[in-house]
Amino acid sequence: MTTSLRAPRHAMVVWTDEHALGLDELDAQHRLLFDLTNDLWHHLVRRSARTEVLATLTALERYALSHFSAEETFMRVTCYPHIDAHTAEHAEFIERVSREKTAVMQGHALGFDLLSYLKNWLTEHILRADKDFAHLARACHPELALPADTAGAPGFWRRLRARW
Ligand SMILES: [Fe+2]
Ligand SMILES: [Fe+2]
Image (cartoon, rainbow, N blue to C red; front, side, top):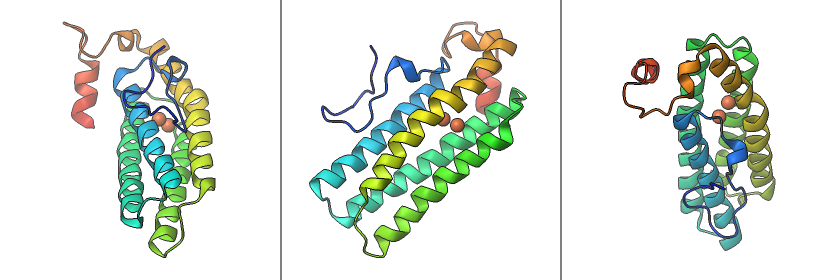
């Protein structure tokens, strides 16, 4: 079983093969989102200083924005039919993280409810919504099943990267 590269022993969320979309770059980004969620979990357990909590919340917000932008480009390029509903889910996630960041800046402690939200949102969204676009894209573009670094692979990923 493959897990996140730096999943701590007592992680809040653990990335496993079950979460894999079979799209290497997006899978790597999902692992990093899990790692950042686990970092926040450890801040909560250790009652870290507000500056540390804010730094991780900011990193999560920025990384999620960049990941969502990559996925939305991917969905546009592959003509995914449910892109609007999917994008709305991304916006809801960013809004929730941003709201927590504001609360922490105003002096509130990091809430367990945010950790619970992150765990539930990430796992549910990946297993349902992300898997849906990955499944449809691979059905329409069989070349996507090739690993990104396959020698002589079609230029699909190269072209896609140029747009990200
Ligand atoms: Fe995703
Ligand atoms: Fe997504």
